[in-house]
Image (cartoon, rainbow, N blue to C red; front, side, top):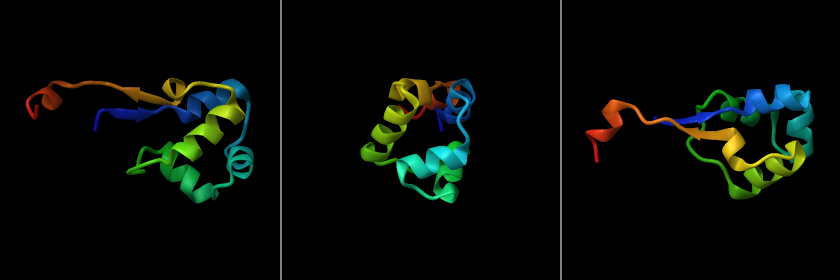
Length: 75
């Protein structure tokens, strides 16, 4: 997959713990861990909205698209 999650970077920049973010956003630490590791298959817009509001960032600060050569053959 060519979508990468940079949530750890934003947490470090904002000096916020995963536990603090999970509590503020209203998700479990386990679900936040799944998101941070890139194992999540989806994210609700309401969750992304809450994360961005709490971290004062844009969705593009958290989600990144990186194309690789194998992705282009599937198009």
